Image 1 (cartoon, rainbow, N blue to C red):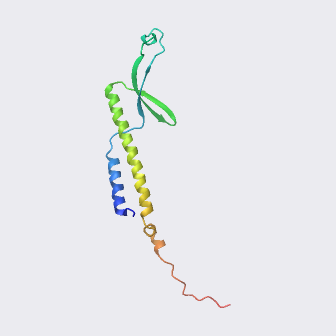
Image 2 (image 1 turned 30 degrees about the vertical axis):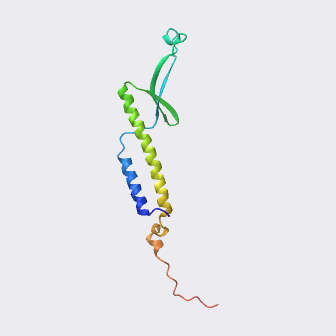
Image 3 (image 1 turned 90 degrees about the horizontal axis):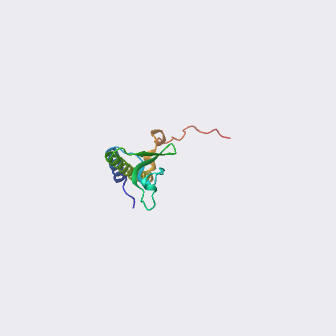
Length: 132
C-alpha cells in the first residue's frame, strides 16, 4: 500500500526545513599529500627517509577543472572539514527530497492537477445537425 500523500508532503516539508537549517557548506574533499619534494639538498631525498609529512589540501572542481587549496592554519582546515561535512549532509537531504517528490508525483491523483478550464466539462451542443 502506498504512503498517504499528506505524510509524503510532511516528509518533504521536513527535508526542506533541514536543508534551510544547514550552515555554510561547499563541495570537495580533504586529502593529505606528502612524500618527497624536488629540492636535491632536502632531508627527504636521503635514502630511507620517510619524506615529508602529509599536508592536508582541499580539492574540488570549478567549471570542470580541479582546484586545490592549502590550509593556512589548523583552524582553517577544521572550518573546511565542517563545510565539506555539511555539503555531504546537503547531498543526502537532496537525494531524499527528490525521492519523496517522486513518490508525491506518483501518488497525487490526476484530477488534482487539472486546471479550472480542464475541470469544466464541455456541454453537448443543443443545435440539431441538418438532415442529409
